[in-house]
Image: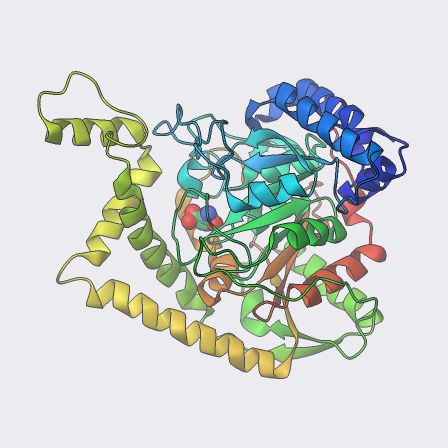
Length: 479
Ligand code: GLN
């Protein structure tokens, strides 16, 4: 097995036992990137020299006999909206194409102290707004399983890179499904943590009440290990808090898995549905009991999500005025003209659409009809999940209604498809996306396990147990 094909835990184990060095790991992954990324476009920038220097530091720590974290020495890819001191952070936008981060996000400090090695910046939809990484200023990411399809989005770079072994593990971000959907499209495993479980300090904001940083990996165990490193309270993000340590359990005995009837609506592709239904049997064979639950508010999730997300985005993106951050237009006669031209040139079409929509739903006269009403729906969705979790411990659902979109698909279908993922962000809950099979065209399908707030442990345990008796996560695309 090549080094770049290993899981993060396997590689870290070999580094600890001195069978391999972090330098060898970095060079192996860099080779895989060189061989494949021209086709896939997962990375917006690479820093192999910086990674080799970091690898040397980890090697020194190993020879000093220091106590290393479970993922020390493992190279990692970082989504391009998470700030790393001295490296570009473009958020997939022309607006920030020349922006160099002046400080580290907390998650970067944490992975570095754990001895992990950031290797490059992963492509994404502009400001994380999208479903296919096609809104990126740096071009679409291609799906490693079929180059005529998208990798999903907005963390398309993270998911495709892990699927194609262009990185061992990655960080993504999820506001309405951006970790889980690309993981399902690319056949890898991704965790959207509970809102507040991971500090957002240093994350370029999209919709602050929904944004969360999370791991994308080859297995549930890898994502659990990375989540354990990045989670925890941080005084610079007042919405963050500590949560229990993640010790995965080795049985599903006594665990109740809720299957909401509404989540298998008629818009779901037959093969996607069949694979999820088949997974129910696997969970039952592991000792879980499947029960029916109801989430009848599902039909309102997409509308509420887009109103809230656009409202917050319009306010968050107001800071890009050409003065303090990002692109500044030239040849302007007045300050007003400079604002207008800088924003018109710096933002792409999808981002502009959302800023307009967000300003509209927040405007006097429409605020109550749209924004306030969406907040009420959000509250009702939280209550509905509370009710469901009185009857079960985990909810099993689809991630999306279909397999990966073809490049150039109409956005209308994609907007509607966010339902299964965005409802989880509205409720702030944790959810794991993991591969559960393939369709007849050989494209991966995913399933989603939703947990109670701050109970990442249950869904990660269920995911790891599922992967211990299935092999969908082990299949590799031929690129
Ligand atoms: N597809 C959703 C959107 O475009 C989700 C994006 C995300 O989670 N960042 O808003």
